[in-house]
Image 1: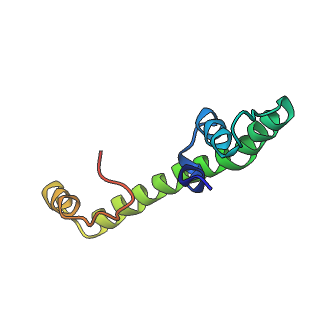
Image 2: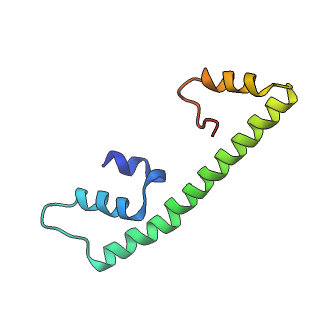
Length: 94
């Protein structure tokens, strides 16, 4: 399996089709029906995952802002937190 296909959330429909084509034997293309199935799968699986990921990031930012506010952190303190945040943090301040 393609490494890109393992991370579906980051794929556009064009990228997904390209990755699926790479997995096919040489000189084998996607039939119209197969292409339609890939498009349908992207629409029913990947698009909702992308929307959920955007919503999760939005909620994470809201929680972060609420925690910073609850602790009364100054903008300089918030900047220091993000400047020293570990690399696995999902998002960074804009």
